[in-house]
Length: 77
Image (cartoon, rainbow, N blue to C red; front, side, top):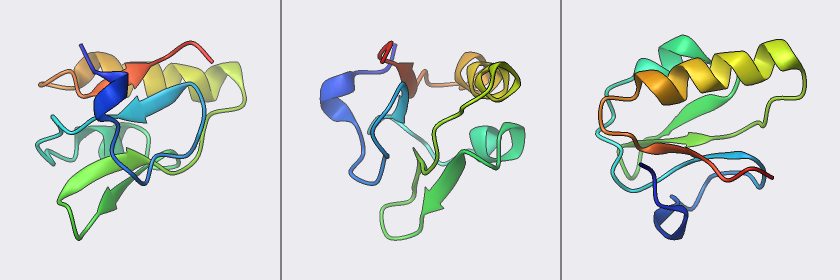
């Protein structure tokens, strides 16, 4: 499970985040490219836009559930 205390710096505030366990596999960026981006300097993904609609939340949940190292979290905000 993702650790909110290990959030990567570039995550925007809100419900979803990526933590430092990210292995840069690209799954979240493929699953939900409108919400996840790559930090080229750190070699990790981050949330650059929070979802606003139910359909957008579903895309982020799909990315979270598919993350092979559970680096995507949902802090419930």
